[in-house]
Every structure is written in C-alpha cells, then in structure tokens.
Length: 235
Image (tube, rainbow, N blue to C red; front, side):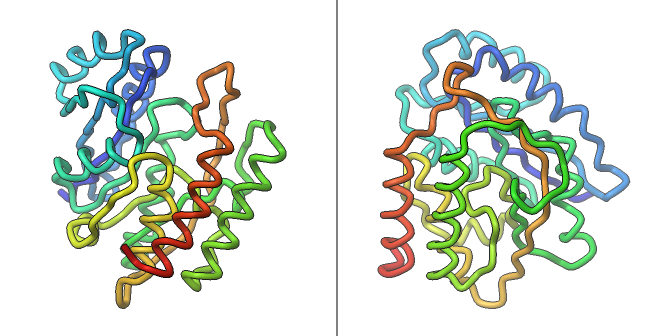
C-alpha cells in the first residue's frame, strides 16, 4: 500500500482542528492503493489548540510543536521533514478545503504518473463560497506573474492544495516562513527537469477575517517579491 502524508500546519485553530482531522480520517483511499499518514505541526498556538492536540496524537496522528509562531512555511518545513509518505499533500487546519477531494488530487498520479498536482479553486465547476473580490483578483494576478517566470499555465498558484512527490521535496531547500511558501515552492518545482505537474479543479469554502482568515495584503506584496526572488535568483 502506498502512503500519502497529510501535513497540517496549525495556528490558533481550536474551533476547527478536531473537525478537520476527523474529516481527513474519514477519507478512504484504499481502493486507489493509498493509506494516509497525518502530520500536524502546531506553530505556537495560544488559543487552546495545544490542549486538543494530545488527543489527536493518542489516536495515531504525529504532532510536532513550535515554541513560537514562525509562520506557515516554517511549519510546513517541519512537517515535510517528518513525513514518511511517497506523496505529501498540504492541508490547512481550517475547513476551507475539503479532504474528501484528496481523491481528485490523486487521479493524475494514478492515471498519468504526475509528480505534482495543484488543486485549483478557479478551474472547477464545484461549489464555492462567494467572498472577497479583490482577493480573487490578487490571487489571479500573482498566478499570472508566477506563470510568466515559470512558464507554467497554472490557474491557481496560491492554492493550499499542493500534492507533491516527497522525493522532490527532499531535493528542495525551502526558506520562506510565511505565505511566501506558495510562490517559492512553485518556482523551485518548475525548475526540476522532466517534472510532471498537473492541475485539477477543487471546491472552496473560504473564511472571512472574523472567522479566522489570516492572510492579508502584506502577504500579497511578499508573494510578489518571492516570485521575483526565487525565479530570477533561484535561492
């Protein structure tokens, strides 16, 4: 049985993390030849999330802790280092992305030998919560600029759902601590010779800021800087 490692960065998600992990555990991929490994990295939560994580660890999840908040990218580096699966998929600890769609992400792996699969929020007929217009414009703009440098034709570079062959991650040195992870990993994957990158449509149930959304306009500016940095200088 092949293994898919689900790496979940967690920061102040006491309202959603138990429900999210329950949804991940409910995903049965055995008919596709995969079993799941769950890896959580608490990135210095202060809202009571840490009190919940031992329950998840006792029931089979691997849990790692940062003493201080370092950012999503830093949490993912820790999770990737500990993941044992042949493939790794990033799963946010909120409920914006539906773990049942791991099946959709794995289809190009099984049918086409994909090395990387992006889950696009824009290339889909699936359900979407209607939220912020300018966020959508910003995401599309950043994807466009990223594509200009990587020569990829992605529709959603900023998506959380990135499924990656772990052997590729082993050869990449990641540096971004926050949301700059998205353009950085995209740039570095695009440079790998003969890498097979696919994109599939997914659903999306975005959150408002009142509901806990964390990314802001400063992260968009940083993402643009990271597109230039990691495509022009490669480090």
